[in-house]
Length: 160
Image (cartoon, rainbow, N blue to C red; front, side, top):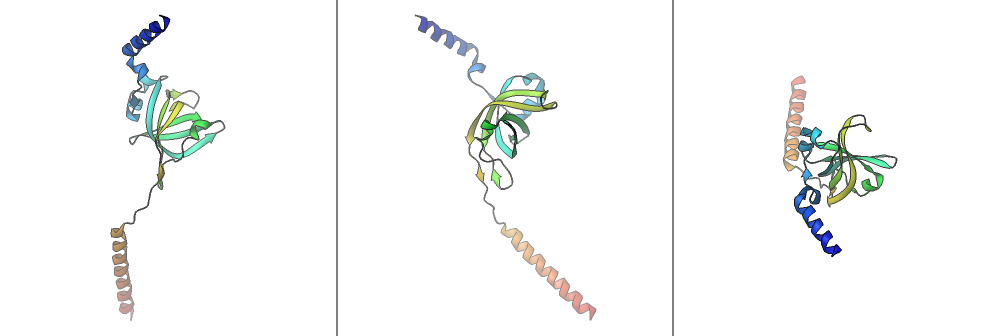
C-alpha cells in the first residue's frame, strides 16, 4: 500500500512539474538576453568546448560555444578531465552538455556572467580537423609568381 502511494505521488509530481523531470537546454542568447530571469537558477547549456582549459587548483575554466556566443563555465578539475578536445584552428572540440547554476554577475568571479557546473556530459567527441589543400590558391600563387618574375625581367632589360 505504501509503495503504491509513493508511485502515485511520483506520477502526480511528474505530470504537474514537467520542468523538474525534463530539463530544456538553453541557448547562449537566451541566457544573455534573459540573464535576470535565470540568475541563480539551475540551467542546462550545451556547446563545443573551445580554447584552453584553464586549471585553477581543484577547479578549471572552460569556454563553451553554442555557435552564437560562448560562456565561461567554472567546474571541478575532475569534470574538466572528461574533455579530451578543446576547439581550435586544428581541432574540433568535444560537444558537451553542462548542468549548473547560472550567474548574471558572479560575486565569486568579479561580476562576470558564468555557469558553475554541477555535471558534464559529453555528447559528441571532438578530434583533429584535417587540413584541406586549396588548389585555387596554389594556382593563383603560381600565376602571380610568374607575373612577378616577368616584371622583374622587364625591369632588368629597361635598365640596360
